[in-house]
Length: 330
Ligand code: BMA
Image (tube, rainbow, N blue to C red; front, side, top):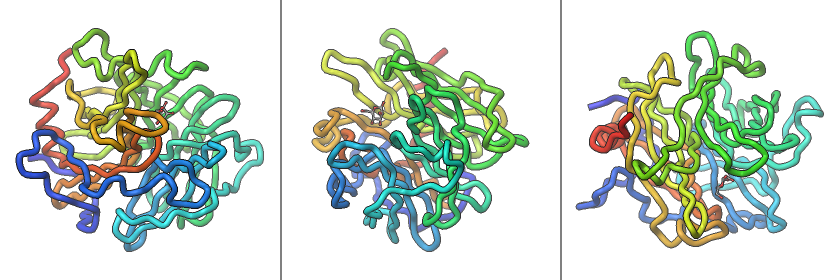
């Protein structure tokens, strides 16, 4: 048995694992929870993040418009399943050079102390990691981009590691996918980032081919008594394009660039119609997880086929046992 270190949150969405189901992550039976046209302007609402807030939940949603402009919108929910998403995108306060908008996508939300931090893929002469904070999901303060371009996934840790804030990210270059490995970085103030360490990369050959093209961090890492549980996306390039699946790894609690375990098998991949058919077929892309320390339950929010948002469930024991049963050696 393993333990999640965090709050007891018995109101997160949950369904028990279906009888006879033979995989570590199972889908919510009424998926997708957010349809592509949930707000009047949207073409699609997918890679999005949620967090406990007040007596329910708040979220930051990637809504691509009908001109297919990518932006992020705040939303609220009492139960984590039914969401009211604002009809206007988030407007950031801050330095005018920093808040200039090219595009914004794939948000993550992380609570550290009394602030909710948003990180996202931010257009600034190429994609980099935008950062902002809010206390109330009404007023948002954007701070400096974390890195130089190019970087597409920036995921904060929910507490400092030693004296510093910490982030895992996926540096990139001008192309979309030439490489895609996960790195770790630290910052004393969320402005100046350094101590860049390699965490893990793609897997050559057919040892674990679903993650052979690129990998990137997904939800905020989950603190457990065994280490940081990182759910991430992995991509294979097929004759018919990329397929995005989810995997998991366990990172050292004090030195999170050290990988203690990693699954050879994916934990969820595109199988259902809404995951296989959409604007970009065959994509399951996790951006958030709600957890309940009392039960070890985990509810994963993930984009489906770059079109709609899905919800899936697992537990800390399911994922740690699965990594032990199907370890990626070496
Ligand atoms: C990635 C990002 C994601 C998207 C995925 C599949 O590189 O752009 O937003 O879900 O590709 O299209």
